[in-house]
Figure 1 (cartoon, one colour):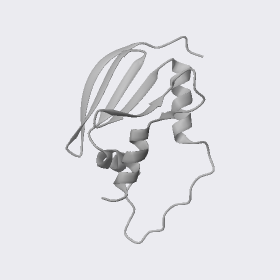
Figure 2 (cartoon, rainbow, N blue to C red; figure 1 turned 180 degrees about the vertical axis):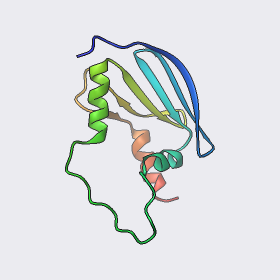
Figure 3 (cartoon, one colour; figure 1 turned 60 degrees about the vertical axis):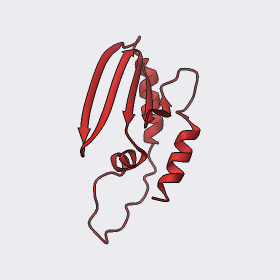
Length: 114
């Protein structure tokens, strides 16, 4: 297990014309995505041809839990924000899984109606 990683960084990435902001200080990282729509596009996976069947869900480990466990092992906390509001926090040492906020639940529900 790592004893702790410390970061000092500010980075702006452009993805499909949208700015993704990453900032870090000490053991805390913040990734800010501009909107729920951009987050949905980022997490949708590779595009499928029209009419192709949806791939079955894998029975492997949950990717969000793996990200949380990695953050804990490295001693880092990742705060994922959508539009400046905390969405999910990974790597908190006092939690067994990612901390999902009400903003995340409402944002995901709202994205179904767009």
